[in-house]
Amino acid sequence: MATTQQIQPLDQTQPTQPLQPRGLAASRGTPRQVLDSIVEGINTGNFDLLMALYEPEAAFATQPGSLAHRLPGIREALGGFVAMKGTLDLEVTRVLEAGDLALVIGVWSFTGTGPDGEPVQLAARNADVLRRQADGSWRFVIDNPWGTD
Image 1 (spheres, rainbow, N blue to C red):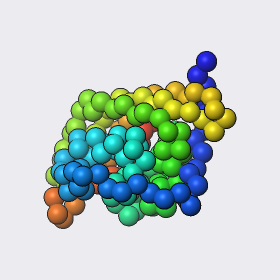
Image 2: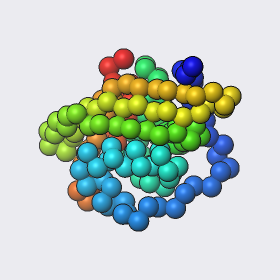
Image 3: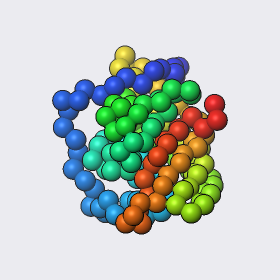
Image 4: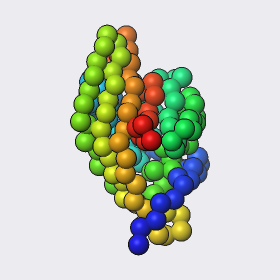
């Protein structure tokens, strides 16, 4: 039986994976591509790719109502997902753009293995805020995988 567990931080002494061949510029060309890149980064454990998707002052909702701030906090929070060596599936259902901001809505599920060896299944609707950068790419300002919960 699957259990819901708190995400544990990743051991920061583990090496990161090299960048994937498609490169960072292509992975941030549109808000939708940023979300595709989150899936790729979590599923492959590629922290270089993941961290390039966030503004330095960004925030990540670790659970409903709780935020990890700035890149070190976000890296630790994402490490919990990566450590479960699972699979993230995400479908973007709506992208609303206004000027240099975008609200990205979607639905996701994650299956992995908890630190106790038990299966973990998570699912929710995300509501993320991204900002267009000076170079035209997009990055997260707020990564909220828990949507309005």
